[in-house]
Length: 373
Image 1 (cartoon, rainbow, N blue to C red):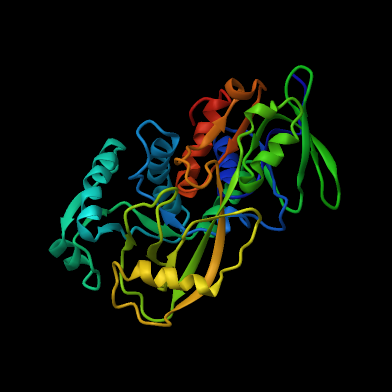
Image 2 (cartoon, rainbow, N blue to C red):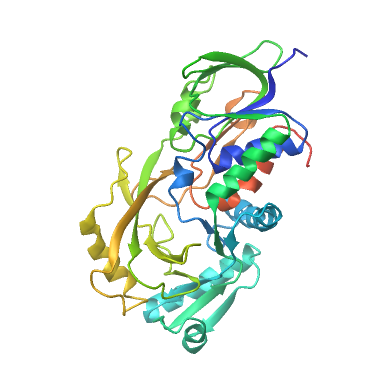
């Protein structure tokens, strides 16, 4: 076997790419993680809700269902052991009106099928006893849901990779790869000092640029690169005291979980994201979008004052489904999908990718034929 610069190379230093590097480091491999941006976690990972999802909604047998629950169970101990801030605050899925109330039972059944712990159906009185400012006719409680410091988490992952002899290299875009005779990969990296690296294993986890990166890998079949869509989500921040301690979610909407409430680790209330499909990376938050937020939020919090919401930030989710199409699952494509040994390509790693990230890393390692850590 030829000598390699590193055992493995990961494209993308967001939460999922770093978690992949960590999964390899746990197995004694050296990994280099390439990041085109000037710092880690500046893409999808920096523009989300920082919610730890329970795993309620995802279809039976899907990667999202399995990896969300597995990832959450791994995440809390990881955060606690490394003193990364989190709040296992719990979550209420609230229903108003007969139609929404009728949707709670199927959500509960799916959550139980997905092995989500502690789920229960609450009456109106039980829900209001927990959250007196709430307006609802019934609710589900998910006690395992929470919020956390996602950047602190990514810094901890970077530390684990570097402690194992690996490296996280920023301002270094991936520019292409080609398979080596006898196994392994030659990878071209750009930036101020372009270079080539040889590695035994290659993992692509670049979020929004997953399709473009796959297109730069020699021999990757174009037919196996799924179409991608940009799902923009906008957030508004509340001026004033946070009204609820727990996460508050309405029943999900087509294509997403819906505009929800969270109290962040600083104690402030944030609402979002909504979902609009866009053609380019536009992170603006249009102030006139607030009207829709007021109408939506007042279904479960009628006391929301006028002029209390201010535009905060927006994120873009790398979706594999477009408007009006059914939810898509994660794509974790190993050699069985594309025919290239030593390569795993990730596509469509949107929510609950952050919660699932440690489990995704483990899944990638297994797809590469590595033993369990």
